[in-house]
Length: 197
Image 1 (cartoon, rainbow, N blue to C red):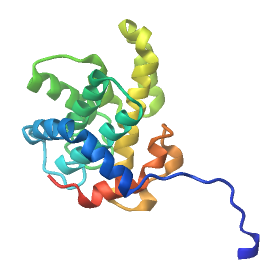
Image 2 (image 1 turned 60 degrees about the vertical axis):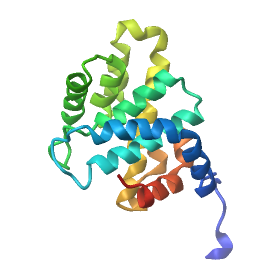
Image 3 (image 1 turned 90 degrees about the vertical axis):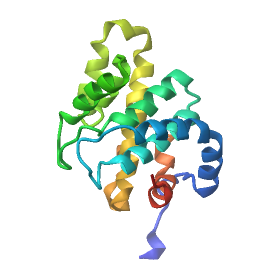
Image 4 (image 1 turned 180 degrees about the horizontal axis):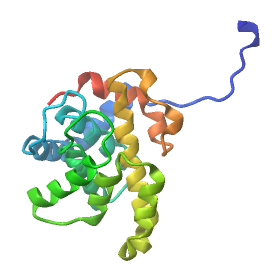
């Protein structure tokens, strides 16, 4: 009965104007990492987890990182993880190993190691608790462990927001980890509809 409808809570959502501003602000770094993505060989040509998905996750990572005023170093970690995270996925089903394979591929292609980036790639599709435990077990990042946890949360949220490529029903906003990501479903949908390689 419409007479008995109550507002339980209100959620603020960002939209087209916000996205337009962010694209203008982030265009240089976005195109830098888009160029990197175009040179990466994906294990298979997937319509679900392919380069266009990685491109959308890249932009969403950059947007969320900018909202958190992250350093260029941390933003670069997220952007590079977006490029490589699904590059070695060999199927579109549940696959706990593909993130770790993407991390290995990053090391091979770039010729460098970055333990935080590799952790994000490896644990992006594994339950949060396992990723948080892995962070606790990296002794040399203990002074940054809260920041590394935030980076993992941002990345997982950006990846989850791209579930809107299927439908609005495929994203449970309450499962997102960061307050900023919870404001971005409309932005993610616009990105999904308009961002192409």
